[in-house]
Length: 570
Image (cartoon, rainbow, N blue to C red; front, side, top):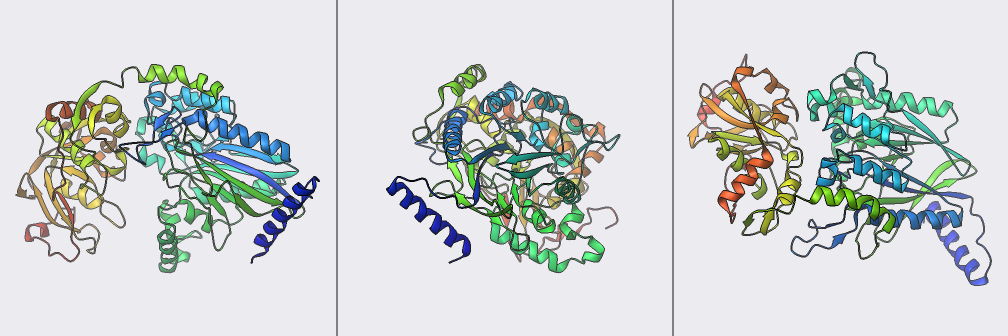
């Protein structure tokens, strides 16, 4: 039994004895800080069914009002016990629901104000309605926004509506907080939405402010970051170790190859930067019921599932004498994530009153039935899920194009069976992206596909093509079969491709698309949402099926016509 487990056992035994004898439990020398957090709320503050658990009989979630009840109960108990409470959010606050989008985030900030958040960190999607709107939300918040790596590109200075750090004093312990946004924001936002902004690299920024906070007397360092942990912690750690072993640190820099690429995830970051005691992340929507603790730096990392389904809660154990973090306690038997089931955590009436007017206004038009589906449609791998086929087929049919492409991250929900409303389609496509029809030659089409299967990339969603991939082949040459409109790929042919303006702006690693001349790009003014709604109306009841438009076949021979060069200089 470890020292920490022995300590917990002795404390628990002492508490039971004290309770039985009527005396107060002895002081165990520990400060308990109830860490409560949200990440990737995406506007999900209203009550809603948990369709991700059971699409036919979804249990009701209480949303922000249930979270408020839980937060209030934890705060009351902590106060009675002499414990401390810290409530925080790490970004992607509003984009993704009618109440979030239609109020441009105001409803979410009003809710955060009412519940009593201590601070928040902006996420990449908090810029989806422009930097001016993001600044507006920060200024209407009754709590600070932390972001140490968000600067004006013209001056290199922090924007004046965030602060880099925060020093908290809790029970005599000083906790220094550093806020960080993923630098990937510059690749995931429209250029006009982040115009004039620069997102500094994470590792050197964290080091700088860690040292500054330590010099100011911080006992512990808390990293609040809109960057996430891997979906599989074991695979993530193995990849990290493999990258370390294969990279020449003298050439790549002190933080290894991932740092040099500017693509570190949270696991890689806390391994590269020592001296961070606790990290709370987001962005990947990957819930961890127990923290990831780095084997080398011992940083304790937390993250919850997104979309307002859960609230994170862990009890940090801090030794008052050594002023160090010695462990944590789970919030309940299920771990550190509290699912906000309405029948288990009854919504707080006062918070419901804050949310309801925004909710009713936003939902007024969302119940319109636009068609039906013969069964539920789910998301899956690249180009091979019913929802992906529905969306890309709708895009292509809308303009009678040769090809339609869509990034996997742009599809945010599944579809239920039965009647389909505007609300269900909005849940899939909440971003308001418009469609462009782009004339691309065969070389550009292949470059587009090949770029999305490089390294560990997951592919791209499409309609109008049949693609076979061999992931064991070298990067930029993994396509072994490619047919468009039933005919073999031709590097010299021209194809009409329907694509979102989001991707044409160079996002999702497709910066080379911005080199396409404006004369070959036709903005349609039609949103994806409109195209999909109209498609559903024409084809109801939907009977979307899987097909062979995207196949992975390791070891498959490459078709001879694909040996033709498609990159300049090849």
